[in-house]
Image (cartoon, rainbow, N blue to C red; front, side, top):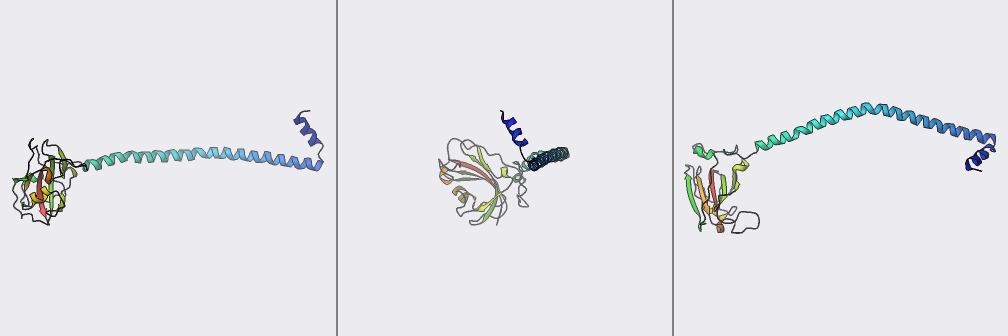
Length: 219
């Protein structure tokens, strides 16, 4: 005899009251399944407008996000290196107009300097820089032998400010800029010993260096 037949035979021998109770339980299960089915149908119908709202919201978000690179590009463009004096550069009233333009700095040659050499390219008419003062400058730095530029305040669109003659900068600057008059443009040919040495290990340029420095002011 199969199990299904056995089950039906067993149920047929149950008292009438118990059969009635089992019938109610089965009816309750069928009703519960029907309610679940109706609920799923309603949720399905509801999901369409919810999905539509989600899609619209996603498109709006994507549209906003897609504009960010343009804004970033604009910001980068505004911070791009400039060959004219940076907005933060306050020049003396009687400064040579040439100080408004980034200088072209060439190589010094194969024979490196053994001592500091300062050459005045433009003579300013302001006061002389004194040791201990804070000076504001624009500058371009290149490797003496090759003319390869390694640093420039012009590329940051912002003059540099620092204390001079106090050991805050390389010796070639500390000694080469004291006494220079405000409004001047000077060329400093600096031996390796007064710069960063022959073979620095911190990523700075080694060997002799050449700087062209515009002295914009002191404080």
